Length: 507
Image (tube, rainbow, N blue to C red; front, side, top):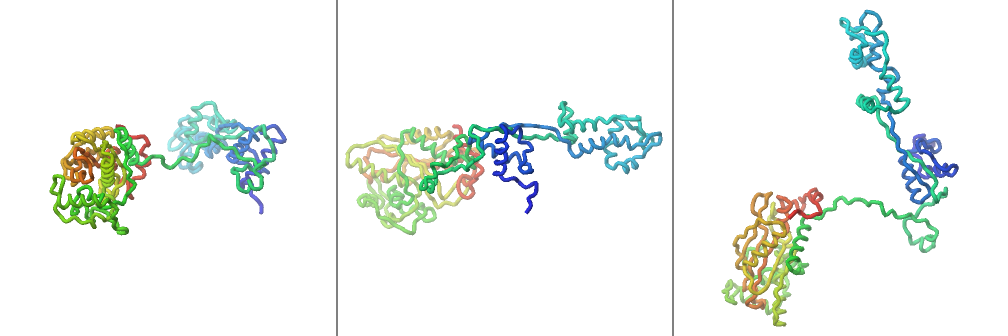
């Protein structure tokens, strides 16, 4: 089967032709017009090959850049047959008999329309009645001569003239890139394929000893990732962590999404009839559905304070059921971890008789059976802070929260009295959201009740201040997002996440 002259030349054939030409001479002056068996070779194919050979020091090369002017189809027509105004001049008969506009158009076509205005401007022809007559006996067609000269010389020194010709679409600039090639220090015509890896077969046969390996190009740039931005929630979460660490807090272990109702609700002095313990507010597990792995003596003290009271409290006065406490659920707050940590701290005090103040924090997921809207998700991150010590007051809690959020960059804050089963006094925390133009609740706080702390075994003079926040809503305030579903979930705005810079927002 015959191969057409325009068919691409194989890379191996180009390489062989270049090396053969270099072997016969010291170099190739210019690869422009280089042919392999009569077929021109694309310069793009040549440069890829030269780079490979240069990396192995077989050849060296230099780029040759060239630029020239080439006539367009219209420009070539003018160079061959004259300018449109000259053709109009020659179409007008000599003498005093004018040629009518329709006759001129019939004779020259569209050229008459393009050329007659210029011919009049050049004073080559003039109006006579309803037609045109010659105004001079002969003309000098400079436009034709200019284009003929450019076609011959492929350039023009006057940039203004070239700019005008480009505007008229009579010429077009052409750029070319070719290469001069010389022998390298390791020149050879016997070029073996380079291996990129040491294979198992090479090691077994010993071929690796004689193999030629491709050099690593440590300056080559890797493929750029589609996006390199951290998620805004991760950035705010990390900022939370750094602020807590700066304030001297230690992080609690929170890798436990499934919790019993006992640690999630009962240990916090939250009654079993509380609406938060209904299925429409909490995700309960079906398999396994229950667990009884909690301290029995502590369970009895919790049962008593719920049903009968104690420690100066009258309790709730209901029949507390262990089966309710055994139900497993997806934790609704990380305070379930705090309650277990405080119980362990009480046991440590019981063993040693020595009290130590603690400052703990946690940042992890919690789950609520919420109706999704612009500010609520069924799964979100809770930030919790707990401080246990002697002599703590509500003022300590407010001051700590102000200091914390100021470091985060949120200064417009309000506190509203609230009710929580396990804190008294209690406060909801609000921050101003410029995008929503309203105050947004970002957390809850308070001082843990004696009914929660004393059954654990903590000393009576120890107070515990605590607060629970989200990462999503402060992130919305910091980034100006007006819908929480743009940050997470199936409606997440990926374009926004990609654009969001790695650097933190200003404080």
